[in-house]
Image (cartoon, rainbow, N blue to C red; front, side, top):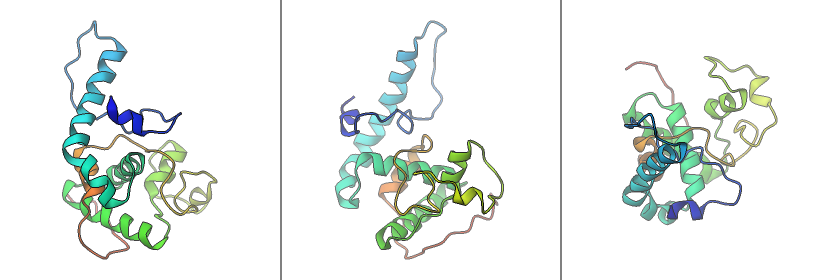
Length: 166
């Protein structure tokens, strides 16, 4: 897969295995399943993401990492471009992202409310203590989050509040 050549040595496939429903046969090998997931990612990347990367001043890993945070932070597809805008705005001014999703990634669980101690865990993935994006994706983002990462809403917000309402 051509897009994998853009990743640095040592990156895993986390974030690049596109989440979807796939038809898989009992005799399918792991490689076949992974290939299907990467093929789907590649299609979205080529059609929706690749040409926007330079304009957004992001490389592939940064865009997918941001998309993975958007995926975990958002509940509704229509809010993802706004979440993206908030994170882009924070990145542009050197403000910490302060994403609960990145701390939950470190913890390995989703907590309704993070403690102050949770937000102080030393990790390159902790966006409460580090400025900028984590080193790699924290989840596999869907299409809406991938597009939102490179096509944020045109707003100057630095904060968002999720109400949990559908």
